[in-house]
Each structure stands twice: as structure tokens, then as C-alpha cells.
Length: 217
Image (cartoon, rainbow, N blue to C red; front, side, top):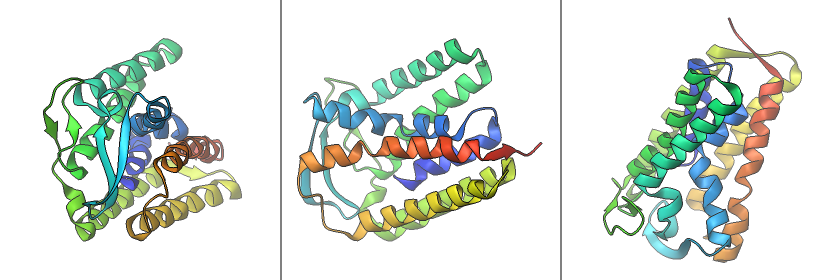
């Protein structure tokens, strides 16, 4: 999924308003944020394979450190644990840990059976929602609408920037989402690796949104 992950980030704000939206975005996308780093260092690998699934031409054939079930649990515990050491907020730490793990759950729903159980274990999981473009778009759009609804119930803009930053982000997400679904594949794996690093900009955008919105009591 793509916008589905951000939907979880938006919706989680209702559960614990003290956490910044940028931190939520970092948590729910953490597996994808570290993935290009492993690609660039040669630890993990991906191929561009037309027809892999109708939704994406990418073959995720080697990413056990970032996306296996076991490591998703490890990354969730590490993320939540580090947040607890910094903020001393147990509830927030648990929510963020679950946010990290939610990424694997949504990938399990959308990917074909390419998610390894653990590094070195040749058992793969995935329900294959991506085999249907219409079903994927409908489900992710519903997720995003629910996430936006919950976020708007939990926050309000404290200035004009709070509205502009939020709605422009939603617009960009949808443009990228539709573009990815129907545009040509990346020109090369190297281009994909550097493009994927751009997801960190969305985390920064989340912090920008958060600085211009306040929690509704």
C-alpha cells in the first residue's frame, strides 16, 4: 500500500494527540524509509519486472531485513523502545510500535506472496490485493478517507498554513498514487532507490503540518 500507510498515520493522531504527525508518518512508513538505504548499500535487492502485479512492476525478491515478519516485529520494538527512552510516554511508545508493525500488516494485504517470514527462511506471505487495481484503489481510498476524518476530528488549523499544508499534502499523495498506478515503470533500479529516499520529505512535511495545527480538546 501507499496512501493506506499515511491513512494509519493520520488516524493514529486521534488515539494519542501528543505525538507529532511527522513522528506518526515516520513510524507507519519506517520499513519503507529504511528499505532504500538497504538497497543502496547492496544489503537488499529489487527488480523491475513488468507484469509482476497489475499495481506495480517491482519484484520485491530480496528484502528480509526491512520487510520480513520477524524483522518488522524487531523494528517495531526498537522504534517504540527508543521513543520511550526519549519521551518516557508508555502509551505513545506502544502506539508508535504498533504503527511500525501496521506497515507490515498492510503490505501483507496488498503484496503478492513475497514477504519473507524471517531472514534465511524461504517462506513468503501476501494476500495479493495488488492483483486488482480497482480493488486496491477503492480500499486504499476508503482507508485514507477514514484517516483524514479521524485526523480532522483530533486537530484543527491554527493558521492558514495549517490548512494549506494539510490539504496540499493530501492532493500530492493522490497525484503520486494515481501516477504510480498508471505511469511507466522507473527507468532503472538506481533511479528507484534514490526516488524512494524522497519519502523522508513526507515525514518532514508531516512535522510542518503538525506545527500549524492544534489538538481539539
